[in-house]
Amino acid sequence: MHDDSGVAPLRDPRRITELLNYQLAALLSVSGASVIRLCEGRFGISRREWHVLGLLHAFGPQSPSELAANCHLDRARISRAVTALTGKQLVRRSVRPDDHRRATVELSPSGHALHATLFAEVRAINSRLVEELSDTELATLQRLLSRLRARADAVNRDAAPDIHADRWRGGAARPYWPGPGGAPGHEPG
Image (cartoon, one colour):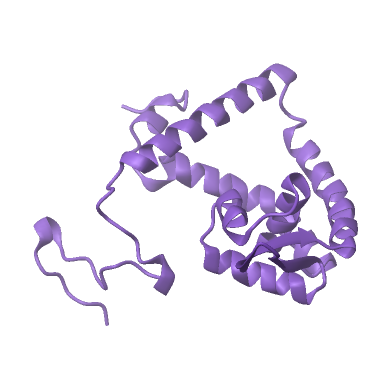
């Protein structure tokens, strides 16, 4: 039986809304809406482009592969974001002199200026979001997030290592669910 403490639904979810990932995604959706409005409406960049700008500011010049790993996205999505940011003159992409097959991406002066302006506004939104929590609660939340991240990495390594999603084509490897026990189901349509 589920109790009101919130523990049981997280440990033994009975519906999608009780899953940790669902709740985190819902929080990100609600809390990120104002950031998306700022990015798109005031500054003309997407949330993904903002993410790339922020990581280039935090870690300095990076290869597209490093950016993809730091953004937790595939290289194709990072490539599209870098191309868009290059077109907006917010980043520079240069070929490495020691290996012409490899590139480095870095913020341009305009990218640095945009980051400084936008980060100040996003930081204010972040402050408003967490102001409800005490310092002790924030420290606990930070520890819990770190533990959950480490655990998620371990689960990701162990969960269904023989199954691969077909994310490159925008869908699952199977065109339809085969039904219980692998029995053929009905194709959509």
